[in-house]
Image 1: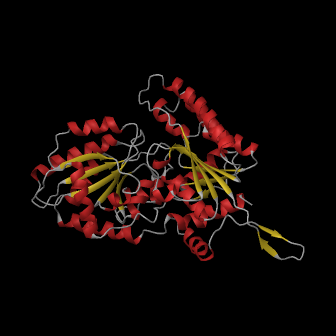
Image 2: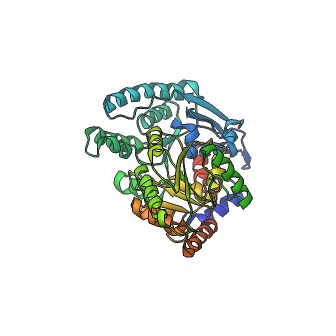
Image 3: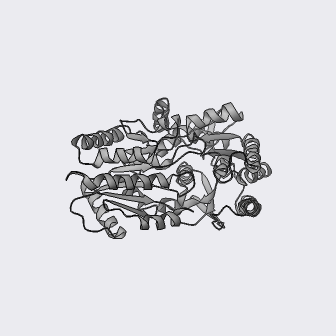
Length: 449
């Protein structure tokens, strides 16, 4: 988190941020508070259970006094705190079928966009009450941005885009940067994005990109921060979680306690699973002649996504003796303790735009777990300080070397891991609700009055 946000956070926490209160001036000049409740429709054209940032928005808005209509897919269970909140109403959309092959991708995509446009417009114009503010997650840009703009103009609402990445950059992974559809998608995203009333972004690098290349200025940086439930565990708590996980993962009895590594995954094309497999194989070979102090690795790859089944099958074919590579889906309520039980986190997110940041790193840091992250550019400096709270790598061999250094039995490796863990705890910073109150909260209040 940037140092400049710290005094803003402190001020917001001391004064509080309420968006449900508007004011009017009566004839005698006295100011009185009205009782009008601000309505905010929050949209993610994705699985809400796997869209933590948009769900955090919904919870923060509800806690600030707004009435929230949450629109998206319901493929996995929602966070119980969100599911039972009296100020949040969920409006499910029909989730599309997953298609991993490239054959017919453009034609299927065109039909999917057409169907989603109709369903999303129906949800925004007929199924939900007229909002004061419509918040949409981007990407996907198509058809979200167009449908949101139409809905806000017809219902006289303000449109706020929360930029996680660029939709055209994700599309380029499938079709290539020079494909006509990708070029058209970039123009579409730029044109409709510019017409929003306000913008939130996850990194300063993304704010700079929007300003310099897209002409979108004034974006508010709302960095990914962990929710309060991501917190370090005691040694006893970590051991209890590991015992439960070992049973679920069907791990064999080991002579000594292994090192636990968690790699949170969305199982999409912007994550380099092949690199993780390469590192696991290299570490396994290196440990064949390692000293007695070398530790086996249990690598738990969490999450759901379109590529999961294929890679899970690949994991089962690996001939590894010192590394246990497992894919495991855990519900939102259990996920924080699984993360906190790890000795180390690994991120293999390979940014398509170079300016997005994975929330999974924030989750690990909130739980006090240092992170080894795939280095895709300067943007990562906003989250990772190499040698203080994590390490950066560029290849499977570099990640394997880091794992060997940390867990290969050398005393200096154990010392480094302890320093990284201490640095992660010391630099934890404010939590999501605190930063949201300081940055996004005033923006919603402004839009709702």
